[in-house]
Amino acid sequence: MSASEGRERWELLPGAGLGPLRFGMSPAEVADALRVSEPQKRVGGPYEQEDFADGVKVFYGAGKLACIALDAVMGPQVLLAGFAPAGRDPEQVHQFLLDYAAEQGSCLLYTLDGSLALTDLGVLLRSQEVGGVRMSRPILVKEDWLESEYYRDRLPLEGVAAPHEPPWPS
View 1: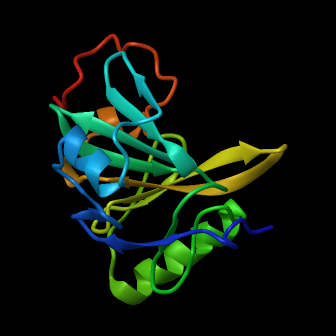
View 2: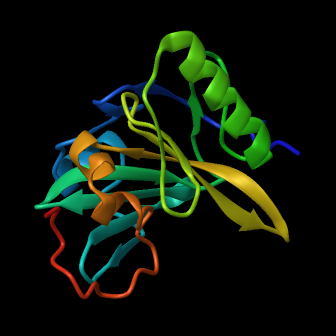
C-alpha cells in the first residue's frame, strides 16, 4: 500500500529543513512559507505545536522551528534519493533507510521504541495507524532535538502529557 499519488513533493535538506520550511524559522515565517495566514490549530502544553492543512505539523523550541511531522497519507511527500518514504509499509521504508545509510555512510540510531533515525539527515521514522494499517511517517528534526533522548523519544510530540522533567536536554 502506498499513499504517495497526487501529493506535493518536498525536498529534504539535511540539517536545514524540508521543502519551504527551514529550522529556526519563527511561526510567522513558517505560515508565510506555507502561504497561509495562520495555522488551522495551535496546541498548548509543554511544546509549541501548530497544525496546518494537508497533514503538516510543526513544533517549536524557544519560538523557532525545530521539528516537522508529516501525516502518513496527506500533504507533502518527502523525497530521499528519489524514494518517497511516507505512507508505505514501515518495514519497506526501514530497509530502504538501512540500505541508504550503508551506501552513504549515514549515522544510524535506534530510539527506545525501536524507531530508526538517520541522525546526519535529521530523519526519524515513525509509523501511524491509518484505517487499521500501520504506515510509515517521516519526522524531520533539528540536530540538537534528535541528539537529545528527551525530545527524540517523544517525537512527534503529539498527545504527550506534560513532562515530569524539564523540557531541555540534561
